[in-house]
Image 1 (spheres, rainbow, N blue to C red):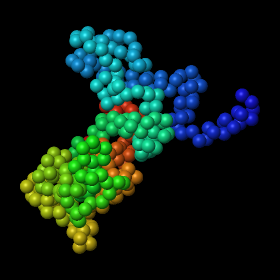
Image 2: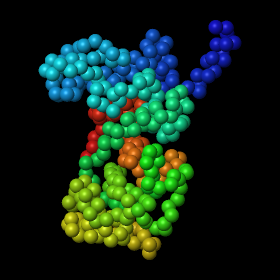
Image 3: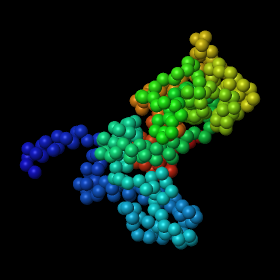
Image 4: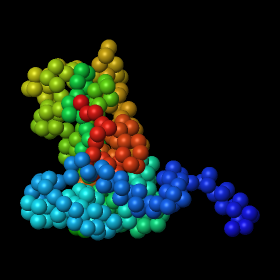
Amino acid sequence: MQPAEWIRFIAQFAQLNRRQRQAGIALLCGNEPHDVTVTLLENATQARLGCPACQSCHLHRHGHAHGLQRYRCVSCGRTFNALTGTPLAHLRHKSLWLDYADCLLDSRSVRQAAQQLGLHRNTTFRWRHRFLSVAKTDRPHCLHGIAEADELYVLESEKGSRQMTRPARRRGGHAHQRGISNEQVCILVARDRTGQTLDFVTGKGALTKAQLHHSLLPVIDKDVLLVTDGHAAYLAFAREAGISHQAVNLRAGIRVRGAAHVQNVNAYHSRLRAWLRPFHGVATRYLPNYLGWRWILDARRIRSSETLLKATLGAFPHLTVT
């Protein structure tokens, strides 16, 4: 390479992201990016490696396929690899998985990720929900102390459905009925003062007492102080469940009553709405995946592509969940 070409070449290094720089270092060391990803996958599953069919740990090596070590179970005779039974099974382009995890952590859209990685948008859409299927389950087990609860509503969406029950809307659209109706889906968010957050897609229409019993009761302490707005469903739920409850009258402009307020959960609502807006309407059937994705980002539970890839395989050694 001529000196002038070299100068032009190294001038582009400043535009590389972290993942691209690591891939370049791997190539200079004689390792393919594919090998780096495979090593990470193998190491993440090695400690709990077992037969997906019979859960036996009595196995032996049985060659390689698609870059991964295969194993044969001595008990049942079935063969498998590190990805068998995981959301990443049967997916291709392993060398791009860490780059795609970076796209998720940057909240890139399906088309933006496809353009960046040189893939078809259907591939990046499929990867999105495979990557999030396990990572979204990393949630607190219980809320303690003072817990705030409030609901928000998003327009019901059948985006991507082959058999729609209504005419299609473009760019999210708008509800035809005023107020809360069955055109909208309720998302219940509960958050304690330590920042632990839980959310539930309760269904279409207004929040009910029965939905609170089903969603909220199993995940809050009996001695918790539940702070909500003046919605009648919360009052009835707290009375039947025997939970301490305080309501703030937002309509009357009373937002704070000592330590009782819902400002934390409302701030989370605001961040969630702003984050969802660029997606131009999220399909209702995938809404739990997006809520889990947002929790990962908001709580900074997963900060690197390597950690997200391990989480997709169910490895959460770095997380402490209450």
